[in-house]
Length: 73
Image (tube, rainbow, N blue to C red; front, top):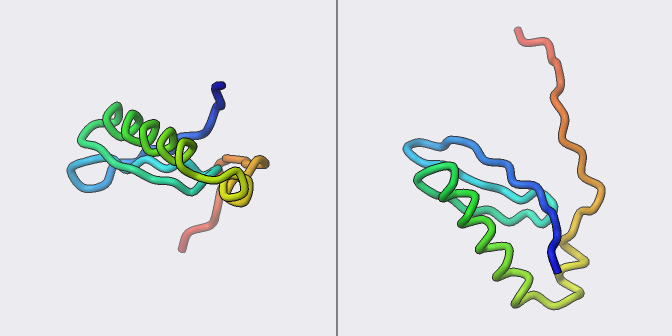
């Protein structure tokens, strides 16, 4: 079975940090692709080892990512 999840990747220092906000699982890598693939691996390991209850408890199905305009200063 396949499931689509969100990957947010941002530069941090000399590498990249990746986050899946639906499950609050993160990883990292030296490149964007490394961070993405390491996150995929972490998520697959989570789904292999977590109980159905833990998966249900951590899963945030309603996730909205948007940009906001805010006043600064």
